[in-house]
Figure 1 (cartoon, rainbow, N blue to C red):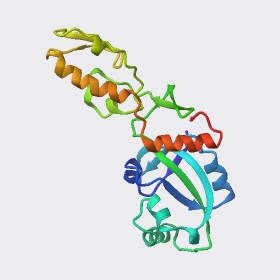
Figure 2: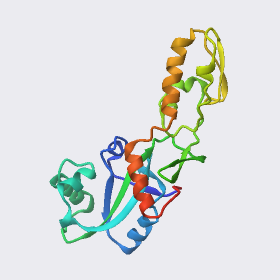
Figure 3: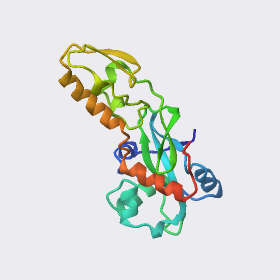
Length: 218
């Protein structure tokens, strides 16, 4: 798996505020970063990490950047970006070429690529292989669109008063001693989210990859 290192901005990536990063242009850099397009990449900052899906790589001069470009980098404006660039690289040459890497946040630090995939807009995306435990029904993982589960309809078919249900989503018999209406409400929320309400930013990213002839993310 490719890795991409950041000095800062990991939280902005996870919140969807940072969707681009720029690096000094070299033939080696643009060759390496271009190979990331259509791949899930481990984004690393000071020992912490998250996962992004790289959707494009292009060349740009620093002088051609706009405030909107700076905001896509996670900054408030262009001046703030330029100050950060000067601090990181020890100077600022507006005629310098840079490599622009475009991406979207894909999965949290728990993400492990599964062999199972889901199709979005004609592109196959890997789901997450992190195991879901029975008690994880209300956890972040259980509500993630990447969770590799299936809705089997058992909840809706269960008879009132049943105290045991088999849930394929969690691969275990779930024991529930409260009345089913409350239980069903929790399960309904879980299974509704299973119906792959894929985040719009992922849908947009996938459409872009498809336009590049990429039909499977790896």
